[in-house]
Image 1 (tube, rainbow, N blue to C red):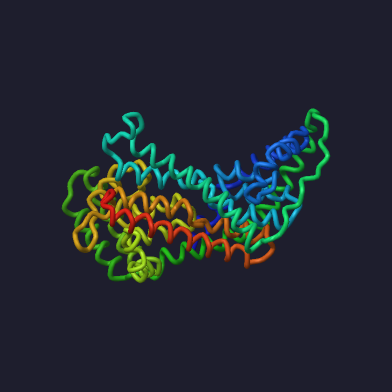
Image 2: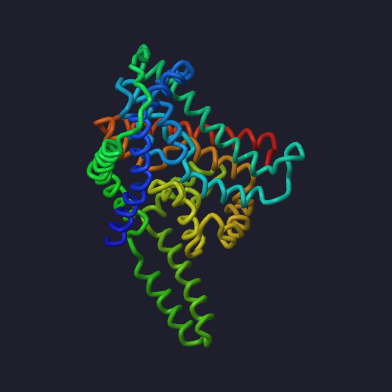
Length: 385
C-alpha cells in the first residue's frame, strides 16, 4: 500500500513543474497583451474544424503534456468550445508517447532501410505518428462540432489590449492560484486512480511464487562465490519473480482474458498488460513490458528489452513484434486515451464524470478500430508481416 501511495504522489508531483510553467507562460502572455492577438490571428483557421481561436495555446502545449493543456482551456469562455477542445486534446501526441515510439521503432525498424534514399524508415514512421495525431485531433473536433456538441461556433469578440511590460507580481499570483487548484482538485483524483491501478498490477500475491524464488535466491547465495556474480544472479531472479507475479495479478489475468481481442491487432496478452499498465502514464508501458519479460529497470533504451521483444513469439511460433504489429501498436497509442491523470483532470474541468467517460470510450473505440484496420489490411497485402 505504501508503494501505491508513493506512486500516486509521484504521479501528481511529476506534473507540478509543467503545470507551474504553463500557468506562468499563459499569465505572462496575457499580461503582455499577446494572448488575445494569437487567438485573433488563428481563429479563422481553427474555426474551419470547429475549434475556437483560444484553443491554439492548449493544443500547442498538448505536445508536452495533456494535463496542463486541458487546464489551459479555462481561457475559452464558451462551455461548448471548451468541451470540444478538452475532448480532443488527448489525441495530441504528448511527450509521454515518445518512449513507446522510441522502443517500438528501435525493435522493428532497427535496420538500414531508407525511404527515398534519404530518411530512415523509423524516422518516417515516427513523423507519420505525429501527423496522424494532428489529423485525428482536428478531425475529431470537426465531428464533435457537428454531432455530440452540435451548435454554432461563437464569434471571437475580444478587446485587443496594448502591449505592455508584465507585472510580475500579478503573473506569479495567477500561476500560483492555478497550481494550487491543480494540486487540491485534480491531484486528489490522480492519487486515487494511481493507487487503484497499482493494486491491480500488484495483487493478489502468490505465496508459491514467493517461496520458490526465495529458495532460488538462497541457492544462489550458497553456490555463487563472487559478490558481483551473486548480485547479478539475484537481480535476474528478482526480474523473473516480478514477471510471474504480474502475470498472477488481476492485471495479468485481465490481460489473458482479453487476449482474444488483442490478437486481431497483432498483440498478445503481454502487450495487453503493457497497455493496461500504461493507464498510469503512457511511458509506464515500457517498464511494464520490462516486468513481463523479467527485465529489471527497463527503459526505451534497454538492449535486453529490445532483444526480448525481437525474439518474442506468439503461441504459434510467429514473431510477436513485426513492423506491421509495431505500426499497429503505435497507431493504438496515438489515438487511445491511456492516461488516467488526463481523465481525472477532464473530470475536474468539465464538472462531471460523463464527459471523461465519453472521451475514453470514443477514443478507445477509434484506437481499436484504426489499429485493427492497419493490421488486418496490412496482413492481407503482406506489408511488414
